[in-house]
Image 1 (cartoon, rainbow, N blue to C red):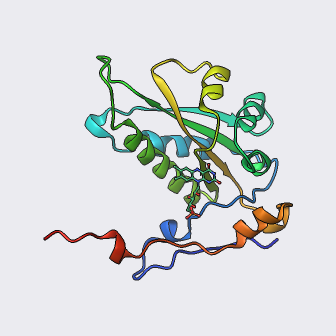
Image 2: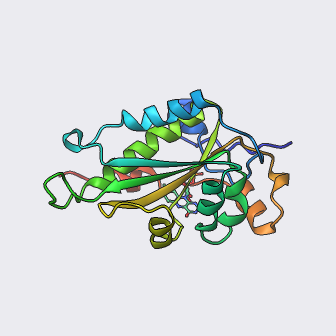
Length: 194
Ligand SMILES: Cc1cc2nc3c(=O)[nH]c(=O)nc-3n(C[C@H](O)[C@H](O)[C@H](O)COP(=O)(O)O)c2cc1C
């Protein structure tokens, strides 16, 4: 089994949890996630920072083999329908779009992203790989899972044990799995402040 590693090329060392994390598509099928690992990942999201400690995130969890997992997989777009169902869990992150008094919460998605980032790092620390997915039918998700009207589905995390690239059967997916990772240079990201 040739598990692809793609450490980030950084100008100075950063924590290995950050440099080694990437978003694979090759997952080992039918691997169950234990309760402790799942709970730790949820706790990591729960303890994310948020504006005014508003905690606008909510989680919906589907385990491989259960009917929610099949339903959630079917809502994914394109190639994701083929590789994401091999993950151990799919966790949908939903955001509260309003404050308690009904006024809009424009920063909610920022908070949701922080929760997703914390969950991703905890999962990686526990030996799981995470692939975040915005490509799914949000309307159908809301209907299928009877999402309350003040919540909006934001992202689905596919979390599982990484497999070798050989589990991918489509050439396009193999190509993406072995492709290098790149980022804009810091010189482009850091803007002058004069
Ligand atoms: C908000 C968000 C949405 C994403 N949506 C998708 C998606 O729908 N399909 C997909 O294959 N990857 C998706 N990704 C994964 C990104 O393509 C990936 O993180 C990016 O290319 C950087 O690669 P790396 O995570 O391996 O460093 C998403 C990532 C984020 C953070």
